[in-house]
Length: 106
Image 1 (tube, one colour):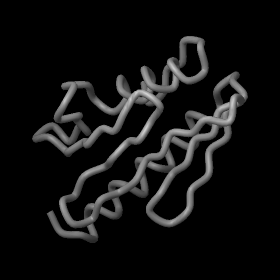
Image 2: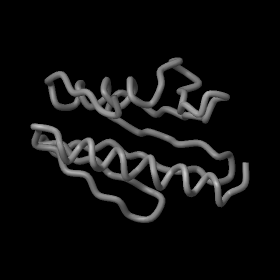
Image 3: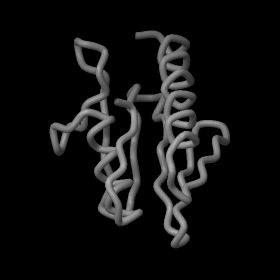
Image 4: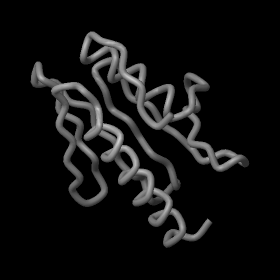
């Protein structure tokens, strides 16, 4: 994959995540700045989603840990450590940080 294709995919992904979070009935803010998407929760904690250009990965840093995701042959972002797809991972970490069930990217 070329870097330009990777940037396009991640730009689209960040936009989808922002739209999904903005539509939630939660006190959660999301801010995109360069290669980083910051999700801030009502209690002041954050989750960070960042693009890693060199290895064409998306990384998620949350209260529960750090996760590296790669794009699999089905064009799905997968976590190498947990086996979760990005939707499942984000839904889980956001649910943990808000204390209520949250579903994103479904």
